[in-house]
Every structure is written in C-alpha cells, then in structure tokens.
Image (cartoon, helix red, strand yellow):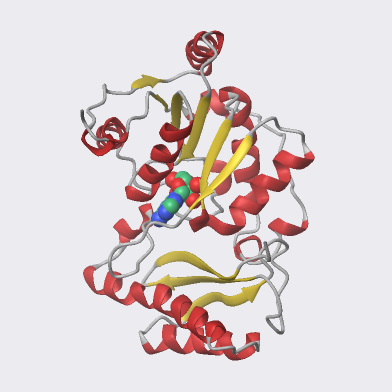
Length: 295
Ligand code: AMP
C-alpha cells in the first residue's frame, strides 16, 4: 500500500474555457461526485498545495483555478509583474493530486465592457480596503464568478488572506451562494515567513528582513498569553519588532476583532493581529489569531 504522500497522480486536465469547464464538471456531477474548489492566482507554493490536499481529502474531485484577476489590482500595483508560471504550477498540482486546472483567458472571464461588481460593505473597508480601495470588490466579483462557473460543494481559502476570508464568507451568506467554505492554516517557511507568491520579488536580504513580520505576530501572541490586554501596548511592540528589523513602511500592525475587524482597545475576548508592510518594494501581509472565540 502506498501512503497518501507516496501516491502518484495523473497530470491534471487543463481547461481553458468556461464552456469546457461546465461540460467536464457537469459529467462529474452526474456521477454524484463532490467537487472541491481552490481559487488561486498561480505561482503556486506549499500554501496553495495545502488547500489542494484539504480538498482532495474531503471531495471526490478537486478543481484549481489559476487566474491573475485584473480587477483586484489597483493602478500602480503589480498586475503586469505578477509571476505567471503555468508549467511549474501544473507540476505542483500533479504532485498535490488536483484533477482539473481552470486557467481561463481574461476575455473569458470579463467581457470588454464588464460593469457588474460586488461591494461587500463594512468588513471590506478597513485594513486592506483602506490601502487598496478597489481590491475587495475585484476579489468578491471574481470569486462569485468562479463559484458560479465551478459550482463546487466546498471552496478552500487560506487564513493568510484573513480579511479576504471574511469578505468571501459574508458575500456567500448574503447572496445565498450554495457552497461550504473552509479556511486552512497559514503555511510558513521554517523561519516563520508566510509563503506568498510575492516572496519571489524579495532579495535575499529582504527575505531575511521579512521574517520580522511573523516575529512581530509571535510577540503579540506571547504578550497576550502573558496577560497583556492593552491593544496599544501590543501594537507598539509589533511596530518595534518591525522597525528594528528595518521595516519602516508599515500600512498597519493592529489588533482587531476577528469577525468585524473593528479595532480593539482591550483584549477581553476573541482577537486577531494583522500586519501589512512593505519590505523593500514588496508589500506583504500576515496575521495570527491571538485568542479564539469561546467554544
Ligand atoms: P493567491 O494565489 O495568492 O490568490 O492565493 C490563493 C489561495 O491560497 C488564497 O485562499 C490564499 O489565502 C491561499 N494562500 C496563499 N498563501 C498561503 C499560505 N502561506 N498558507 C495557506 N494558504 C495560502
């Protein structure tokens, strides 16, 4: 018997158009197969792979989308430079055991005069929403379109993009999207750096410097474990850890409510720490749950 990690998989089937996707998945649905879906922008790494594994463990069929979604990038952001590595991605997805890869052209997702966008409201407004004002309407719109195209039973997202998980959950609840959502843990390098496709932009020195982000989050967690409850004290310690590593371009380093993202003064219940900062010219985000909701 092969253990799961030793299993060899067939290459995933690459699907380029919504019409083929519907046809192929329609046939699977007729066989009563459950469908798991992992939306990505490609340049895949172990973080993405963990979502694929979660889907494979739970569903009969796993579909991964690879689409660098133009509407979630603001003017002056890295849409053109975003790494596109389809051949490597297909290799990784073969090893992870995905059966289908949906990699459409921009024109197959957005007609030239596309004009419908999803605005999720307050949970999309602070933090990323403040620094990337059109980001979440692009994310919500493409996620809804992809969910409509794939019609999965379960969709998998990473806690790495914490606010995104709240935005997608809210959208699915309020728009009655018939899908179950799973949020999977953040996969990190041994030095703590959260895996991200954007880490490819980092120089060796910046990569080392970027480890201060997860260190700052660990310090926040230790403070809370040590019964420090004052959010301001925790936030200034996080900033100190960042600045002493040479990370001074900090968009936010905050403690917030894990469901609303409202800033907290004191930690008396559930809390999450979130950081966004530029390391060199690369903007990175990371987060850590400080205290979970009571069971
Ligand atoms: P992206 O390709 O960056 O849009 O990410 C696709 C999905 O992978 C999102 O749900 C991300 O949150 C998730 N993801 C990205 N990095 C990680 C990571 N280090 N650990 C776990 N999930 C991740």
